Length: 119
Image (cartoon, rainbow, N blue to C red; front, side):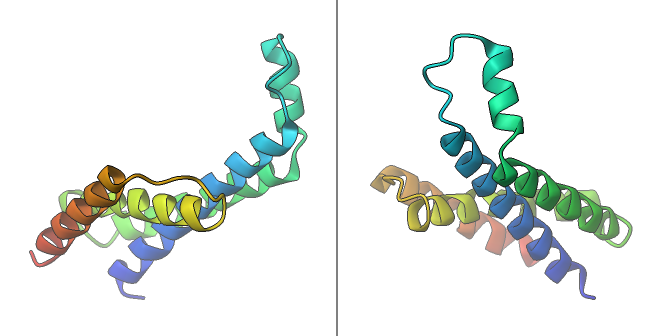
């Protein structure tokens, strides 16, 4: 498989994993708990959190394959696409408010990735 596709898949899996973890934390409803250990126990009992961690693991395994094929100086900057993916998914699925400044930042990231990927 083309390493660029593997990078995109790795970034998407990591980003979706982040959204699952956030969803699990929200579902755990730990804001009122005072004890850190009680909060962590509730969070760790959430299936969404474990799904997110699983997606991170798969993302990391794919990343290992990427690093076996391309230079780190090429691959690593492409991870910044995760900022774009997380912003979009947070806006679409978690219904988070995204300011114009964040959208502008994502556009700048996309421009940087496009320039860098031409090398």
